[in-house]
Image (cartoon, rainbow, N blue to C red; front, side, top):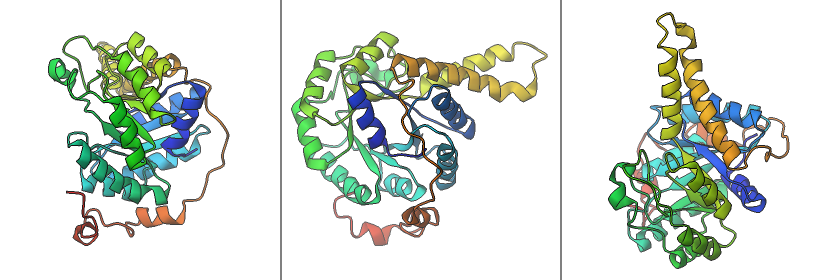
Amino acid sequence: MLVTMKEILDHAKKGGYGVTAPNVQSEDTVRAVLEVAEEYHAPMIVDVNAFIHTDLPWFIHMIRDLAEKVSVPVAINLDHGKSYEDIMLGINSGFTSIMVDRSSLSYEENVEQTKEVVKMCKPLGISVEAELGHVGMGNNYAVDGVNNLTVPNEAADFIKETGVDCLAVAIGTAHGRYTGTPHIDFERLKQLVEACGDTPLVLHGGSGTGDENLRKAVQSGIQKVNLATELIVAGKEELEGFIKDPNFDKWKLIPAFKKGYKDRLAHYVELFDQAGKAWGERKRTAVPAVWKLFLNRELFPVNGNLSSYRKRSYIWK
């Protein structure tokens, strides 16, 4: 059951629970995510990076097909769209949500470029996530974990000026593996929740942050938690244990990885009180006419010449 991320996060905000957003890399990880969603009757957000597949439109078409066959709500979100080309590729590929990441720019530039993405996506029924403040890398946590945190009053203004559907905030997490102990600024999160009103908030860098921190973050007002490194590591560790047996069955290598990945994801589904929160049951829907244009690459050129469309984009650089 394919839906937009806005539908899922609005429901989560009203219901007071969090939603996992695992970052997928292959058909096997996609299937693992959707199996967990079905088994736990949980809404799910599938995050995908623009660089993850050499033919992203094909990859997303595959995810859409699988997502339409499950009975729970599933959104497909482009994670960290940093360039104009990333955004156009995401729209063209069939994502139901786009995350535009211009957080490394000044506040004014971030607002202007995010507004442009919202202007392109909203008429097409695609929800938009943005980032304010900057979530850095765990291997540089001493610097990235304490600098460029989100300012609550700026977040409120940013939402009003851009019209985004949800906002990723920097409150002390980081991407990848941490060097050092993560410290979450819960007082800042409280202020952000108050300032941002009905707009759902997103936490990037969930891996390695710790169960207690993540549980408290969700209970304090975070609706979406991005996960990547920890799920892959869990799959890797399960696989390493499997191949210790010199007589391992070569046909069960991928199922072993999937088991570790699924078990770890299921842990977070339960931790965030996401289990049992799926709603409705929708029959497989026909592909809307506008998506047929995307899939046929007729609406926006992506791998070809972007200059004709870029001429109408005065803000994006």
